[in-house]
Image (cartoon, rainbow, N blue to C red; front, side, top):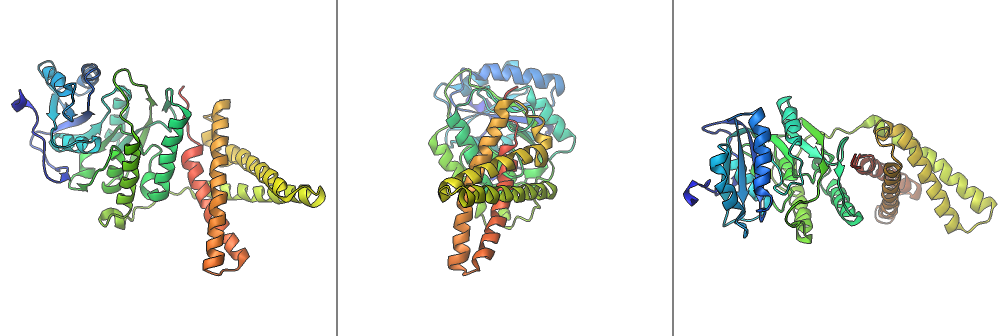
Amino acid sequence: MINSLLVVPSGPFEIPDRVSTPVHFSLIVPTYNEGGNIEKIIRILTGILDQEFPNNYELIIVDDDSKDLTWEIAYSLMPDFPCLRVMRRTQEKGLSTAVIRGWQSANGDILGVIDGDMQHPPEVLLKLLIEVDNGADLAVASRHVEGGGVSDWSIVRRFLSRGAQMLGLVILPRVIGRVSDPMSGYFMVRRNSIAGKRLNPLGYKILIEVLGRGQIDKIAEVGYTFQEREQGESKVTWRQYQEYIFHLLRLRFSTGKLGRLKRKVDFPIGRFVNFALVGLSGVVIDMGVLYILHGLGHWGLTRSAVLAGELAIINNFLWNDLWTFGDIARTQRLPSQIFKRFSKFNIICLMGLILKVLILNVFFNFFHLNAYLANFLAILLVTVWNFWLNLKLSWRVTETK
């Protein structure tokens, strides 16, 4: 039985650029203790792919020696599914390395990955493949574009997910900022975009490794709704969040290609100008209300400043929602969506205020700049910060339709 399994590649995590028997598409399903799901997902995926690419694809299960013998269940199904292949890993562990080892054994011109727990809807596969066939180097299934969302996440889980993305934008803006959902584990990539690149994965977020080290020019995104598990238990742990942070830092300080990254960021200048003009109107609101409450009404300075600041934030949000990000906001008119955008906007602006004070003190106390010049430079930097984070986090579709 074991001799019929795929041999686990060894050595560097590098995808070969040529294969002996090429097929159009290779899809990797990394698994660990997915015995309750594996037969169902194999039947669904092969049913979809058999219709589109008969005998021109391969489905590769890469199992990390599951205690529930997931690999053995998958192997027993091979006689019924000619395009199914199975790899059992006993020396290595981890989702990212499992995906790469699967790609190393794959023959597809297009390489893909999907979770084995039924949380990624299989029907989105064809939409992703269409994007790659139409010229995309990378097609990502995203929870944060039109048609995307999460099924039943708690506030804590949403906060952790968005917090991880925000941290990524700070550490690796040129990589994380290229897609709306860098935490996605559901995507397709052209072989020639990553072939010959020395990958160095850590943890379970393989997409940022592909974005950081691959030759990715054109990216497409397709919305999908993240589903709750039908069988088994979630494998998300605090250790995986730690590995994610270490992975970001390792990529950030890499001395390889990423350290010399020269890829241009598609910065939306027009939106930024609108955002800055709205910010100026907020300054007028802030100063005017502060003068009325504190100067004329003799309210306490702190209370007056807090109220003036919040009114300015409300003003800025309304104008940004109507004008700066109006094209996005018009697709998200549910009251709950508007409230979520406003809440995120408030939190980001509060973080920006804290950052502004820190930058101001650095410029004034360490670089000995004029106080007003230091304040102006701090406002400028924080305006860019606020705009970029709001673009990536606040004005996104996250509701399940």
